[in-house]
Length: 106
Image (cartoon, rainbow, N blue to C red; front, side, top):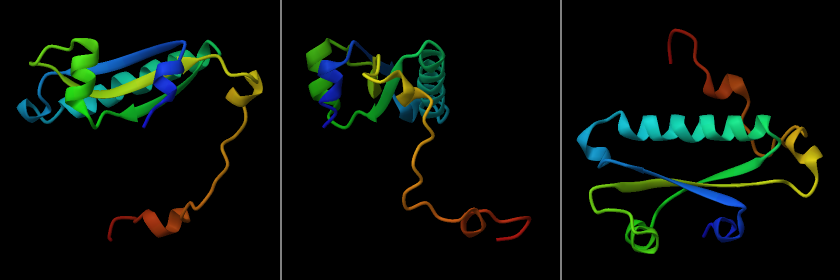
């Protein structure tokens, strides 16, 4: 999976202390990823976030110390068509908001 990482102009792996140590660690990692993606988009750079499932393989490949957990990876690059960054995403298979939003009671 995530073959695009090998071909990316730049890739970032988010490595954190063991997520079991503190419940906020995965949240913080996600926030860091989101802000990197927003900053890249402002510069006209596309990005893609992927979860890391094979932690030992990526740890060995990149020399990540045993006390850090590779949570996610991001690929960054310029799109072939810069208009791709401004096109609205296609809504496919989305449920209606009324089906997933509840007001004051379930």
